[in-house]
Length: 89
Image 1 (spheres, rainbow, N blue to C red):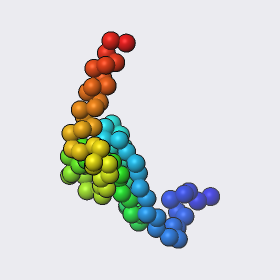
Image 2 (cartoon, rainbow, N blue to C red):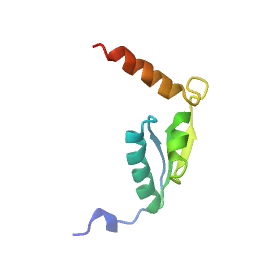
Image 3 (tube, rainbow, N blue to C red):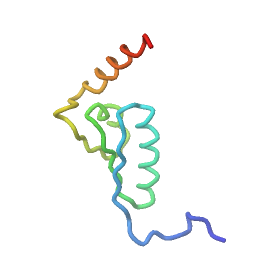
């Protein structure tokens, strides 16, 4: 019986992975992206502008969206406000 790795892919896929710009989400998405890329697929990570810094040296393709609502730094600012509000609960 052959494993999935031995099945030829008849047509490479173009994939987008939607990821919030938390490092704990970006790192696994980067690993997944590279694995799929090594199998001939084209993969883009879709995230807010704050993901650009952590992904800069990763070699993965990033497509930024929501720049009007979440310019660089806005994601971190909102997360900090949320955490501050939740600390008393």
